[in-house]
Length: 60
Image (cartoon, rainbow, N blue to C red; front, side, top):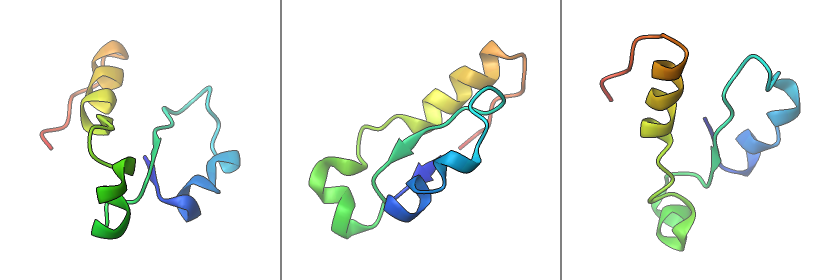
């Protein structure tokens, strides 16, 4: 989960063949209220990935 521009700039360091990459705006009030955070469904998306890959889900 890469939240915010700084985190998203690190995407090139992650092997997308081995890891799920989810990018979104930062959850701070300054960017979250601009539509960059709410509704990104990262937590359910991560759990769907875990389930699909026979891994335990996280209780967020």
